[in-house]
Length: 168
Image (cartoon, rainbow, N blue to C red; front, top):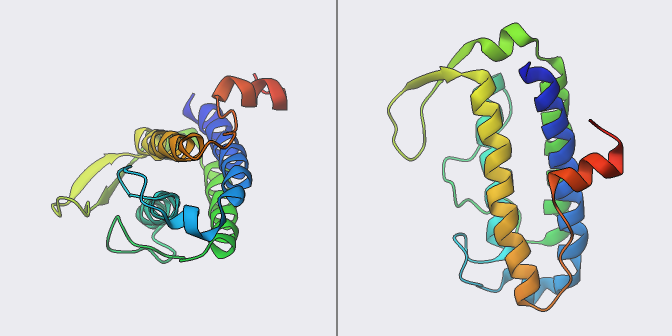
């Protein structure tokens, strides 16, 4: 039950991130780094936060890969390396989701949160849904940054992805 939904969310996540980065390319370095009053201040901070947290979660899920120890880590100071790293992480997420069975998704895993470092155990499937929901939340902030600069922001609706790609 979870697997098919998560495969769709992983593909949607990649699609939405590609669209967002295409639009963000129009910002230029100064506006990309400008504080716009969102939680991670700027487009630079917001997109780095999303990459950092995806790396954190993927390390928790897989036990592999580098992950920062802070949620506000700036992994890349400039746009193009960040875009390349985002695309690689999205491919990694899609491959990981594709490799999972329903039994694995129903299983549990243990990790220690950064914000409250007390070990917890949770089911894998719902944690993966959180990963994608978190992306959606902060992409909304990135969307607001774009429109705040008077730029056209891309449509990021899941239903638009489904219609465009023919997924049901």
